[in-house]
Amino acid sequence: MELDCLDCLERQLLEAESLEAIFEGDERLAIEITGLAEARNSVEKGSLKEEGRRMYVVVMVTFSDAEALQLSSVRLTLPAMYPMLEGPDVELGSRFLQSACKTGVNEILSSEQGNECLFQIIQLLAEAVEEGKLRAERAAGDVSGEGTPGSEAEEEEVPERPQKVVQIIHSEPYTERKSTFQAFCARINSVDEVDQVMEQLLSIKKVAAATHNMVAYRIENSSGHTTQDYDDDGETAAGSRMLHMMIAARAMNCMVVVSRWYGGVKLGPSRFAIINNVARDHLKSCGFLPEKEEGKQAKK
Image 1 (cartoon, rainbow, N blue to C red):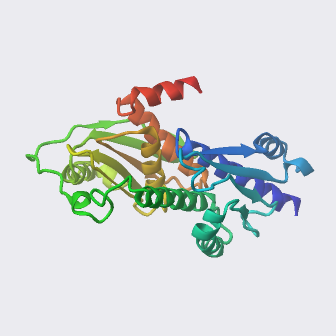
Image 2 (image 1 turned 45 degrees about the horizontal axis):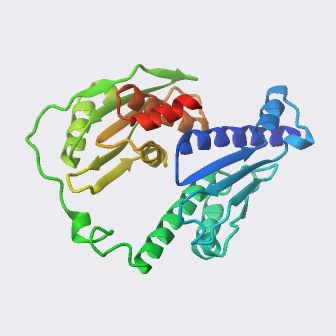
Image 3 (image 1 turned 90 degrees about the vertical axis):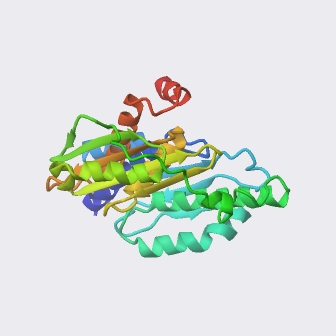
């Protein structure tokens, strides 16, 4: 029983570290995790003390109008046998989130039994708050119908540009437990250039042979409209995590591709932290992170 608890605690620890990497610098919400020190100590010593049996993940929503939506922090409590046999206890903490997220949270808990699911829950919360914020602004008359999702302005195509070879910057490969990760960055101004970058990369035999080629990109056109998307390429939610990191870092008019060559050793949830860190480090080294973001990272 204690060995099972230790295995669960190690998985909790890896998931928590992945969450820290994914949501680092996100101004929409802040994640505070308590119990990490005790968890690391228990895992390193191979023995489980009572105080190391639980970690508490608290999601603090920091939208400027959080008070208007009557939002409070959300607490996710991880039982000793999470994720192997138990799901997290989720306290949504506000009437708004109870109404907007309770059904979705229950569906995630049901479909992800035996798997880590904190990212999916936190992402659901963030999307609900974003939608609530937009509705509140519309109700107050602060946002016109133009430029909202589904409008003609939203669907405006980015002007076509002449075909050209897009410069792609390669990172140094990073290897962790026999899996190798490598990032590729490019400056882009249209979705056509995204396709062109992928065509150029996949013409490289080594990249084409990768287990996964995960993609995320963000483009802002001359009218200020942002187009963004991702591709997991079979690594569930990896691309969406990369895009989330780019949004938090305010990276714009660029794309990042992380290739992974699987080496036969499963990395568990820690692979998401590695993918995000490889992507962020290469975006930063290529100058795609705003100076404000780089300064923020340096202070940490």
